[in-house]
Image (cartoon, rainbow, N blue to C red; front, side):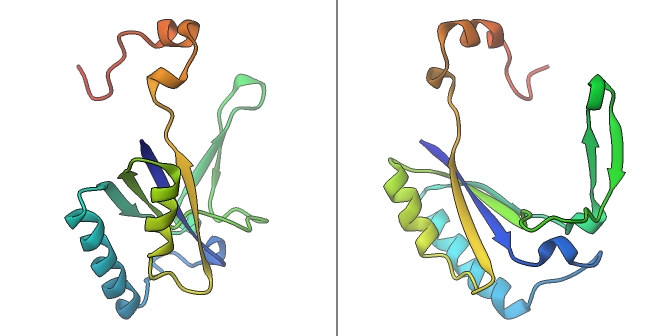
Length: 134
């Protein structure tokens, strides 16, 4: 089962462009990432620039509208993620609980939908699609 562990640092929505994390915190996270790697559960991970450097595209009436960051009123935004492959939600929770996160950080765990999770009609509609295939 694949799970995304989504890091939500409080206050990151208001971070200025180019905001950088504390090097000591990064070093602790790298040790944690190494544990995930050694255990063979890490599929991928990335940190994200603050929303002030991003954009949102909304589709009101089916028409795309672009809004540049920052986005007023955001209380929770993603700061990064890990994709892990584990046997259960309980194991994903166990790994997230080991993270050296700070008091201002929250990790949300979300299971990735696999094709087998969908109805036959949905699987048929998606048949043949392979990400990255050309």
